[in-house]
Length: 312
Image (cartoon, rainbow, N blue to C red):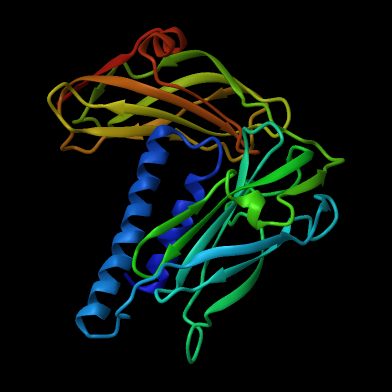
């Protein structure tokens, strides 16, 4: 895997650490994490075959750290926590890392990820890295909607050059960092409550694959008082005995504080015919607070049904 692809995979892993990801998203992102580590293992195997790997393998380790900004105001630039950490490279070396901070209520997190290319001419035995916790994904970092209070450094993950993952969690970090908390001030419009949904209906109880637009569509009434609804997802599985699955999606251009959204999915002409099942429903606001249901009883209560039919 080339460096750009490694960065993309690492970004996906970072996203998986954010609160509000649906189980389907989480499963996809775990696959991306696996792809990243497998690519690193393959690269290491190539180095080993070429006689470039060290005879004795010792993994990188986190040995010390500090919070450089014990207090931040999200309304005053730069408005993000700054940290530093000291890492021993071992004989393998550090390829990348992810650091995560968790909100006072424990329901939200912000993660940042970095690739650490090899230093020239050689990676130092120990290096101190300064960085900020600033998510690369829109509206999911510290900002307008951030919950104020004491945020905690909850996880640091090291990705090694031989494809290993070294994790440091709440049980290890306080002994390594002089402090693991940042006091966050937000005098703006904090938003920590997920949106609500009700009054759903399947608009296409039958979808014909031969139609000009073989589209599944549903309408659902949503509400979010602060940042507004930013996305809606419906998980769909194909007829029993098939491996077909898809999803209906809507991302309003203008966030919806109260009103109806219509998630849709265009079915390929090769889709199997039969009875399809709605397996999940998720709704997220712009601040990335999400609610999710995947029980058939809850889905039926929302839409009045859990199925629709696909014909030729």
